[in-house]
Image (cartoon, rainbow, N blue to C red; front, side, top):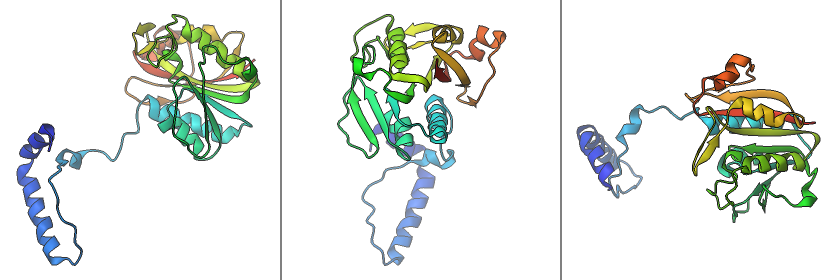
Length: 247
């Protein structure tokens, strides 16, 4: 037993020992044999909720997967999103191709993986797909966290690549941290929403904007105003979720 679990056991020992005696008594009267091999206590979970339906990844993964399901594109490609979250959601109902600078050795039904540096994608990928996602990834481009080369404007090159890969009229689902603009090296960038909108001008049309606030709650199809842009919708470290159309 780890020290943490040991001290947790001591705090809850009367209840746990009482329940253990009850379980052993029931075991003696049962025809089913399950040896109690060790003590591995989790008493703190008695009062926890059944799960957490909050946070950047929970909401963005579910929201964008739902929209891809509803739009049913011809070819959907993902760049750098979480495989054990968003990519898995989409792979449950359709094929998805994943591009990432990091390797992936696993082979999973409905997931096709290609290793690529999306700051400089292969020329043959121009107009590659009609639906594209990049969730909580572009903020890392050029900061070296995942083995990518250091590039102060890595996010610009990444956005240029996403624009190139997508067909005209196609949909880009883009999410990233929002708040007062800054780099927290080498974890990520945080973007001012107004700055992001300036990067989209002339290249993408904003269809919908949703965001996850600092409490981890989703605000779907939010309206952007001058006031909300001025304070990044009240976020210090929120998550902006943009549905964009390539012009």
